[in-house]
Amino acid sequence: MNKASVSVIIPYYNSERTIIRALNSVINQVYKNFEIILIDDGSTDNSYKIVDSFIKNNSQYQIKNLHQKNSGPSKARNLGIKKSIGEYIAFLDSDDSWDKNKLKIQMDFIESRQDIFILGCDHKIVEDNRNIIKSKNLYKFREVNFYLRLFKNYFSTPSVIIKKSALLEIGGFNEDQKYAEDTLLYLKILRKYKGGKIQLPLVNLYKNEFGQGGLSRNLIETEKCELKNFKELRTENYKYNKKINIILYFVIVTFSLIKYLRRILIIKLRKQR
Image (cartoon, rainbow, N blue to C red; front, side, top):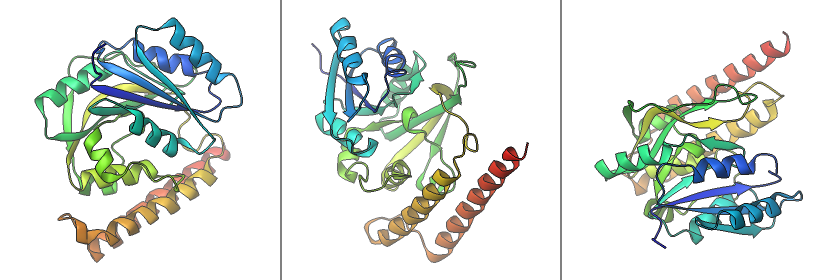
């Protein structure tokens, strides 16, 4: 069996209703040089048994099913990175799915741009299995640098492919941080390496948009962690050429707070409908 170029890491917790959809979207990829590493984060339903059965029925693929005590997705992803053999790492959440051409389009691009260490793509929100994406052959590429990423989230975690060496150098996800830990990781990578985004929706996110289902508490915690991220990045100025001076720090904090207040306002307006 050939060594996989891409390790697809899927943490899951009580995902018996969605995990097969996620797995099918991986094994149906046009690009086949991958392994799948699943990490059960202490599920209490039948998720682990369902995954085990899937592996037995798809033995032609390189699939590992690991287990840990319930510790959160960051620790699960870090475990997956540690156990991976691929040169590149891709992440998928257990309740999301990929277009069949996702890995091929991204890996073809990476082959032509070896200087790109993190590559994302667009995504589409799917509700009740409607509006599922279909990929096209034509797309635009946008380079994303550290300073652009400070102001806008260009990467959803299920969209990114990251060079494993960069992940190991940064140290992976912060396991003590529950919110915006992916943001911190991507910013640290972009502070040293080039990144970009394929402007083509290749990921289905089966989630409600912010403001639906009472997410205000999560928004508060996410905002706290985002501000904490900016503070940490500023304290690490001495390590990098890309600095956050006091003026930039003030601007990004202010901009982040404005975005947060806008989201809270949208939630309140939707509740009044």
